[in-house]
Length: 131
Image (cartoon, rainbow, N blue to C red; front, side, top):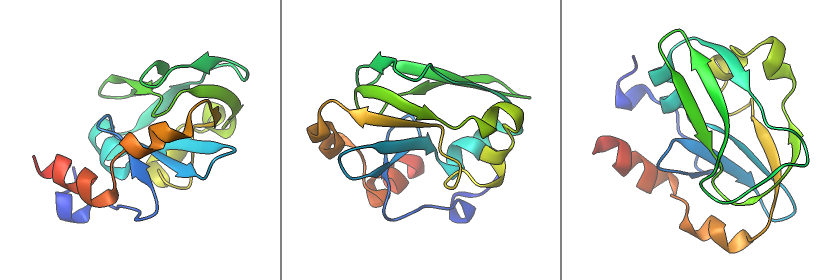
């Protein structure tokens, strides 16, 4: 496992306490998991994705990641409708390990963009990981 100093962070993203990240500005948002999360999971071998068109509230479980170590739930950082899923992950879930910020999991149309204000900045996320 990586030391915290080796974990990659992306300044432009918003993060959750559950280690998801969000990017986008309004119409649609992409959601993935952080470098820290993929490192903690180890080799990801399966991704369970939701159906396009499904709607979820903020904090709802929308899928799972299965690694050689564990199964981890994915939680939606903001409520909304799933407008796309990254189908490439079905055949190659390891893409998340290779580039967790380049390989989003779902794209959503948020129902309330003000929920973005409750997410963590990169500095706040770093502080969370430091404990």
